[in-house]
Length: 245
Length: 242
Image (cartoon, rainbow over all chains, first blue to last red; front, side, top):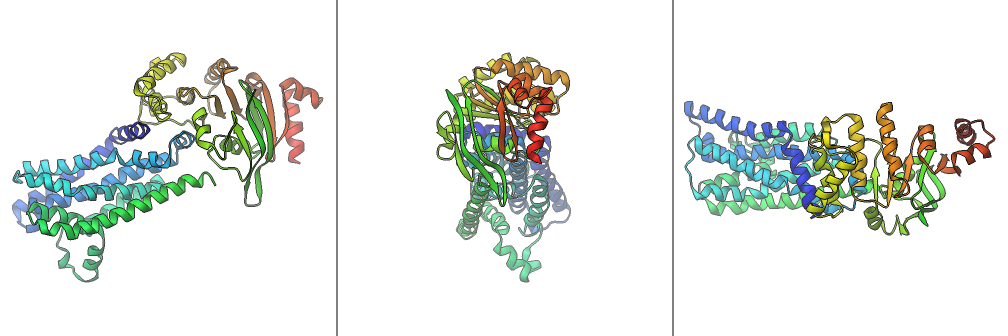
């Protein structure tokens, strides 16, 4: 009950910030429209909707990290957190309370990307639903990244790290905008070691019904999920305990 | 009956004692004002008593519950109105109140009833649907205190409740605080001497992390053979500082 009350408050704080909605939903949609317009003039395989939509959806998730991180960082530096730390809320109430409201928002954001893609010509199929489902572990990863950044950094730093660094990493190293093999070498190796490329590939292989290729990429994402969620929980708990030393 | 008792309560940061062997006893229903110059240890004391920071020595008991070993029990029976206004900015006044009641374990229906009751008591009707971030400083402070009271705490900590408020808003808040006297135990920290004397049953003057004098306004003036309370305060606080 306490978790739900706290989660509801966090949900309202995020969705009532109009900038959040504008960036979280608007920016990925604009990108989809722009790339589809380019594709209609200069056809490039990577910008075909089956390939582009999962990439844009993953890119959009970097904004979910930003919202989560900003909310936590702002709370941490406000007197409201003092009030909440003197209440009977435990660390698990805080962590679930911050995660629960963002997960449905992330799924809605992914779904909206696909709905827009359908209007732009993506063929409607059950596979779209399956793709959205396979992208949920990626959504969790980006939420955990937001939880981690919000626990460690100030709201201004979160703006820089999640708003600039993470969106750029997600854009450049995911293979959404160009084929990573075109650059190759160390760049490609680093991209393969990070989760962003695998996150996009999960969506792409599911979209083309290449189901046997899901697992190798999913292992990377679930591995990152476990590591980042664990670090985020430890970081938040330590920050909370820092007040009690 | 004693509501708050501290036993050699100590908070040490490296080589500095923020609070040093504090021994204090406050009766139920009493409004106790903690006065002191900056760095005297008032806020650190409040933070320890409200389980926000852990003492490095000693203990304190809130209605017999240790702040060290039973902090969760303590948190259920206290509430705090921090120095800066502590509200959820994008929630309305009503939502803020229901939110705080909810995280203290009240059901949705109970939370709604309690919020309605607080809106009535604090005359928040005009602003009940306004987002907290759009309220004036005075209304925000009213809301912040209403959020502290909605959980029906046995002990309430008011940390500099009127700082930054204009004269009228301050007087309104004083009237409100007076209505709480004898109902709940209140610890009030303030820099305003007239606030402490107008509101409190007893005043404790802190200096260098410890209580240097406790008593009513009249007792503190008499002990120090002072002409007024300000002189008594300066004598106690300044002598110790030197």
